[in-house]
Image: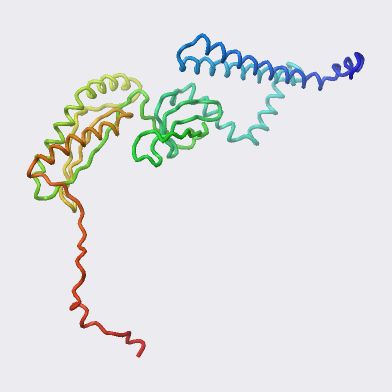
Length: 307
């Protein structure tokens, strides 16, 4: 046990005092974050508001804690710039990836590259943004082993530094529609014009509401980007291929409804194709007939090199 004199001598040691103050700042920051989370859960009903309020408090507390600890360990206010310069030089060398991620977080936050709820793709990883932190961004993955733009159930964490290294694809920022294509191949003897009309009929029915919404969003996004779409209506492209006539339906749909819209269109088109007597879907066939033995009668029965 320390007596009063020993405790007084211990507190006169500047190093011990700085360590105690640092521990106190960290403990206080932890307590404030925990209290803010409980208060947010109590007074906010929406999970989104709880998440955003807690995250804002956490960022503010971390910033204040870092500033406080820096001031504690600084020899004096006049030497603060020197301390920060030395710390920054050491961090730049040892923590390059971490600093890049922090810079990426600043770019994401202040330049609005993406936000929570956006669907993005970067470095081959695609998903819906569910959390943005100082060092990483968390995505609910789409694609993967699922052959469509639907969730796999996995959460993927990508470093924020990737935004400086790889192209970023944002499916939903400002303009939430994408172009999708459905290829259908019919045989050469089929009535490809009738098949094209069937595909156009159902695509035009489903595109009426989408086109109106897309035009409104294009007017808004054109104020920020040089984007101009003159044609938003669906269209069927015709191409001659090896197996028949390839009909490719190109239509506009919401980014998160690509698979659903394709599923609905395929069902309706297949029903009409089946009912039409002159439409036959093309498929590849293989000739599995065994070879005629007479073709090999003139071949030598043994290798002449062995004679």
